[in-house]
Image 1 (spheres, rainbow, N blue to C red):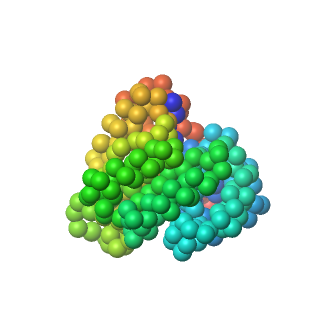
Image 2 (image 1 turned 45 degrees about the horizontal axis):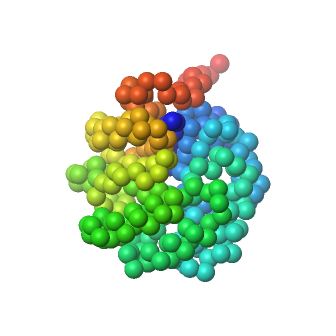
Image 3 (image 1 turned 90 degrees about the vertical axis):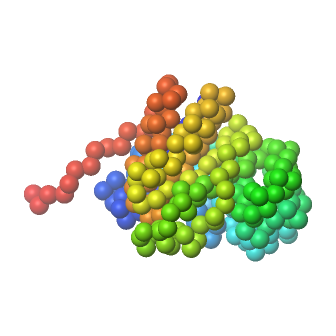
Length: 279
């Protein structure tokens, strides 16, 4: 029974005081959170040398959830992408147990008629890789038959359904450039809270208003606490439109769950930061 929390990235201009070494910003991030989303792998497969540096900068219990390359999920739509998939899996080998899950984020056009391709990918993955699938097609949320077909397929494959909860973001009109940008890019789908495996993963995005963000994650605090009591080990990623305070918010989410389920392992204790002086 473990709880991991993290953010959508491990570096941000607003975090410079928390990441004093620009060459090891991941190490600085890992002093605050114990998991991270790997979005950059969607755009380019990292070199093995780069991945080795990620492993050196993180403790053995740190967890990465890495997105499969877009060549696999969006360009080839899971068909005939074996060379790109092999290259990616070889590159990330140095992470070892730090690689918590392969994140299969599918395009909004990937619907129920494409489930055969998803099954083929999940069956073809080597043993030992945990997989989490994020879908965005409306049918998987609005059509009970399509929803159950997907859930059954994932259950047979031992894969998790990874929800991206944007309901709080879309609950009110945007009030800032960051919120307007998020409105234009994030999927507007209903909240999905069904865990299929022992390792559920959740992505949650709130608002610029931290009060609204915290109030909106209350259902997830309850769900995560229940999962922990059931013996599951969830991983939760906290987003906001600009992510400037997501490090602190992720730690606050962890603290709220600990209040419900005492005895969880604590997060790393970040070194205190002091304002710069002239002397």
